[in-house]
Image (cartoon, rainbow, N blue to C red; front, side, top):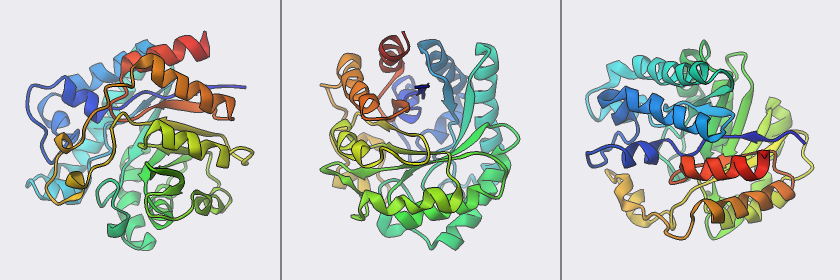
Amino acid sequence: MTLTLLDGGMGQELLARSPGAPTGLWSAQVLLDNPALVQAVHRDYFRAGADVATTNSYAVHRSRLQRFGLAERFAELHRQACQLAVAARDEHGRGLVAGSLGPAEGSYRPDRVRPAEEAAELYAEIARLQAPYVDLLLCETMASVEQARGAIMGAQVVDKPIWLAVTVDDSDGRRLRSGEPLSAVLPLIEEFNLEALLVNCSTPEAVSQAIPLLTGLACPVGAYANGFVTISDDFLVDGATVDALEKRTNLGPDVYADFVAGWVRQGATIVGGCCEVGPAHIRELARRLKG
């Protein structure tokens, strides 16, 4: 079995190393204020043992930038996010760069999802900007089948492998955050020739419920969980920032690695971490899973 080790969370790690309070731009704020810090975080994940750097482009959407009068920097910020990940990978000497395509309507909001054909146009623009730099496109934190479909349709306009990562209900990992059964995304694998299906940005406990439902698929499966207590209602209102989310205090590297080892035993071959899972967690995963 070949195991691919992803990096950990980017946005929350950047905020933890930044002096200012979170803004509505989230991780995109650091691209504006301190791009060298973005490359440093990529560097630390590679040094910890990660095989993949995920670009800091999750939050770079025109709609988000527009609210801050920065829409004209959309293309620039996507290219910059990719270039910083590539520079860290080249410095490390090996590894892959995954271009992050995050939810266009905000995280964990399946109620705001655009029709797939409309959303595809937004994601296609991102895919074209990232394609010259990345090894694959990662459509991540997709909360419904329609949201996933739109992102994949956009990503497929370029000739890059596509990985899909969906987020599941924290209290029932057998369902997407939309309430749809996790199994409802499985037809997308064959329809779009996906090269991996993952579960992300959910509690480790929910991921442990989800992974057994994905074993035996035609593509590799995996997961990267977050370290939040839960996604609170306070975070799901307009204008909320990530300080509305509470970090767990019981998910150190050893505990997180126990969860991940369980997913690997269940058949996961692509694993890593999402929000609040940092370089120390990835280092422990590398020690246990890759020797």
